[in-house]
Length: 517
Image (cartoon, rainbow, N blue to C red; front, side, top):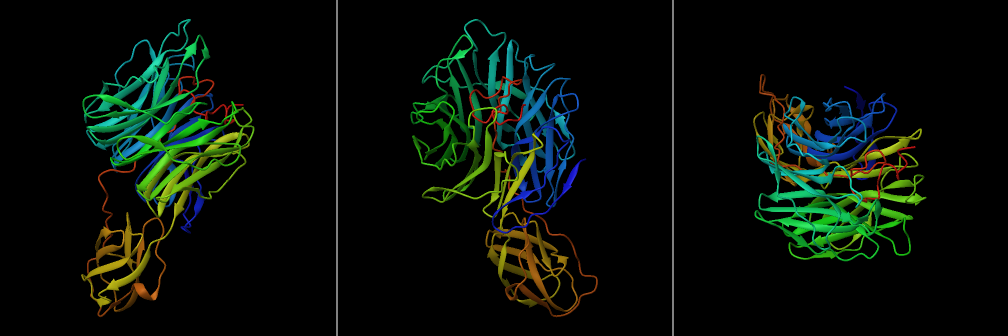
């Protein structure tokens, strides 16, 4: 497996972290999902020596990104667009595959990680259509949803016709589920770009579509929002955007939902502004975001709480909407009152974030691409702040003592050490407290440190004194207490000149981003 040795400085700011590439050609990461600080998955695609797109999967183990082999279906293009993690041995990646070249109809692609390897999982056959999956989300191992678009094949003289597709995993197989049909307005070609499964009876999806006369689009892109209550889909009104709009990700809770995308700028046919909408579970309203440079769009959401939401994307500083477009990564944060820009690293003269995974307030990942020698290469950046230990109680004891550690930034802790010895066991009680069992150690004073993505700095507040040595005392590794579900990935939908069946009109196409020369 290709591996890039790396580490995270954890200085409370965004840092570029070296990620792996299969070759020097095109590689990019379109989705990312996190289970724990040392268990993060990113997916996407690369182009092999035969100029065929192949699936790409990478894993972060706490110290390095490694390419993990994934199978491909047939000799044609295979692409991953999104990933979600239910648990350490239950991860799904979705996208599309083609039996031949880019003129052949695509079929949905789903692959599963069981803790040991990735395998292709068959999906229902969809005749007379070209179908791609753009997003995947689940609330349990037996309730996973994937959404996308299914386009009629062949195209008639009336122009492209297609509709959203929804498939659902019940723990043993995928089946085609009821899909919404956008009605306001009725659209010739429409797609679901993202799905968020809260419960089996509370599912949200966002998308966009447009109308055609022949091969020509005759309407602006139109965003829509749909909700599944366990019986029917209901469409919700999106604030009108006269110059067109799209929505590409949705995240949050039942009473605090966000969706992001882009909208056309007034007086321009090539430039966009960010689009952010919010709902408390009923109506949706637009919330102002920040649109830097000449054009900007948001492609992914990381939800941590009502006063801590991140959105990522790209902003064009040159030639927006053309094959020569040049972009910077874009990060924005909601603090409960306003959206503000957050500085990120620009490793090249053309790069973008396509997805984000928020593990905790002090551990966030974004993925996408940078450009090296004219080709896209994988990009991962992390915003990390180390935990802080402010007290250890009791301050002294022996091996086997129950020790309460207080401080901040403890959520998702993966290690607790007394000196250089791992705690016999520990439990993360909250973001501000850990209960640990001290390991065997010789008499004397040690610093108690906590590791999440970074490790707490030693100080007088974290000291624990062993009163006596206890030969042969049990020593073992701490155990991470995982939660039952991980932040869904934040899918990105792609449209390329040779992969024409992707998202309908999202601005960040590989062609427009200059990835196809």
